[in-house]
Image 1 (cartoon, one colour):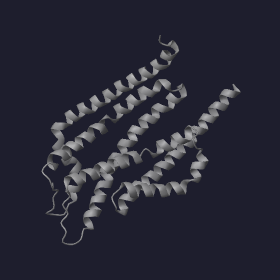
Image 2 (tube, helix red, strand yellow):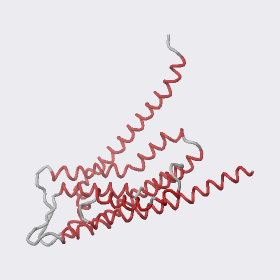
Image 3 (cartoon, one colour):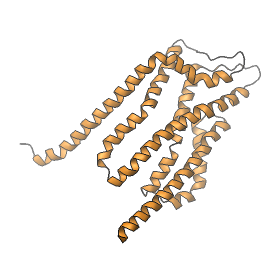
Length: 254
């Protein structure tokens, strides 16, 4: 005979796992449909991503493919990642829908702005990489090539560099959200974070060194925005923590 108490404990877990599987399936389907929609434009999209380097290459230089499959798989790989990038709002919405029932009312109130801010900052980071960092980085790297060396970037290697920088700047621009959340939920207080500023600055430059090409300019272009965004997150954390404390005090008085 089955134990009713045991079944009561197991059913919620089974329901959660079923819902998780359903939401994961929806995410996969959306990404796949976006991939199919982008597939006819794979060559044009790769040309768009390659524009910063092609426009700044010295006269007589061009991009090359060292293997025949690269001409097919490089654009294919690009649209695969683009499908995921474009689907980010929907993916995060599915995550939010899954965890929202377990949140308190005040947590839901702060979670929605945080979720929207995370999406916007991720896209802003990618746009910053494409419109600001790529042209400066390419101009610098092509300008320091030794005399007699013709710069001809390989399309697969260039794509890997582009995707790495997209991810690096996209996630780096999440720094204010992470800083704000750590302060708001009480993991650390604003004063402690403020005192650790020198270590944070050093950490930003270390991250810039690890995630960007081995030129100082690219490292600075990642480290400095991370530092500025950290300061923004610290400021927002102070403001929101102060408001929450004042709200609590008012409720106690009433």
